[in-house]
Structures are given as C-alpha cells and as structure tokens.
Picture 1 (cartoon, rainbow, N blue to C red):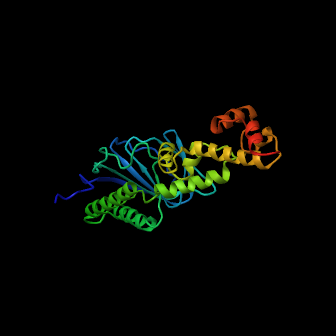
Picture 2: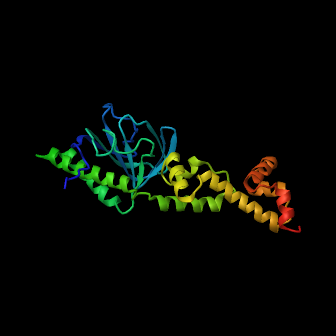
Picture 3: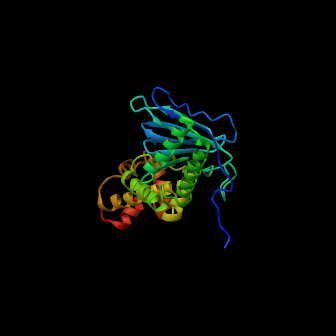
Length: 271
C-alpha cells in the first residue's frame, strides 16, 4: 500500500518572536511573499479585520495567515495581547494550494480547546531554540515546526476546532433566543469564528436554510402564535418580532404563509 504524506516538502523556518504590550504586534505581513505565519494568543484580546471580515481574537486562539494575507489588529488597551508569532516558507501540504495552510475563504482563526497547551508548548520550544541558537537548533526547530504544521492541518481537515454540528447548534440556539434583534450573517459568523461564507454553507447543509432565512422563519412562527393567541395589532406584532415597517412584515408574512396576517388571524382564531 502506498504511504500517504501530509507534508510534500519540509517547511523552511524563517523567524519567531514574542509580542506583548511593551512590544506590540503590528500584524503586518512578512516581506517574503512565500511567508506563512502562525500567531498564538497567550493572553488578551483584539479586534481583527481579515479581508472584508471582522472577528475577535482572544486567549487560546491560533491565527493562521497564508502568504500575502491582509489582516489588521486593533489592540484592546484594557486587555492587551501577548503571544507568539512563527513565520515559515516552502509550505506544501497534500491537497492544498502550495504555500497555503488554510483555505482562502475560511476565517483564519482556530479556537483551541484541549490542544491549546500542546500547541503553546511547541511554539515556545521553537522560540527558545531560536533565541538560544545552540548547536543543532535549526534541526530541532525544523522537526518541531513540521509537527506543528501537521497538528494544525489535522485540526483544519477534521474540523476539530469547530465541528459543523456544534457550530450550527450554537448559531441555531442563538438565533432562536435572539431573533427579535437585528442579526446579520457577519455577526453570527464572528460569534463562532468562521467566515460568513463558511457559516452559510454548513448551516444550510445541516438546518436546511441559511442562517438569516432561519431567523425570518423564527420571526414568522412567533408572529403566527401572537396572531392566534393575543389581541395585539398587526403593527404591534410586526414591531415586537423585529420589523418596524408593518407593510414589509405584511408582505413577508404572506410570502411565507400564503395569507396576509389579518386573514391568517381570522382563519385561526375568534379574536
């Protein structure tokens, strides 16, 4: 049987550094266009902008940047970031575009759970060897770096950092509890550390509807109950479930149920 390899080539270590409140990380890309960067947040939190998406990075998060990725970090003064940055090149993973550790459309953050201590230890070991530069440090760093890349690849491939089921369950529950508020796809995606594209795709796969459509369904079901069991006016119900424009609510309700709210009420209640 042919042996399968995750790494088709050995990553080439470039640099490692610590960042903290005294030595803040600017999150600027390395000048080498082949540079892949892994950032581990040991403490603190920051608002990040990646491409057109925003997310919050906090303690225990691993941020993965492909070559030429555009990311900006805004530090939280009250809870400054502290962590480790590792840069390397010559990355070639089986099944991935050369140089890419993570799919381009996926939000580049993994919220580590049981793997947190293990990954942190590996990165600290790389940093220690890089700073000390004792005999053979390049070989030791190369070995640990390969282990880190394989571990991260496993997390990404297997979805262990945010399984589809648990991710969708969390978003579904949040929508059901907060559908009266104005929710956006970006808000929901940021909450579970994935891109809006990824959330919309997996949520529809598991729930049968995109997240925002599911929110609308929750609103309409609530409106149906209020029409059947309350004396609230259609305008009051519209506002209560999140639609300030009653005319829009009327059109949406008819589209979803086949009947306008007033007619639906007459058919289902004596109120």
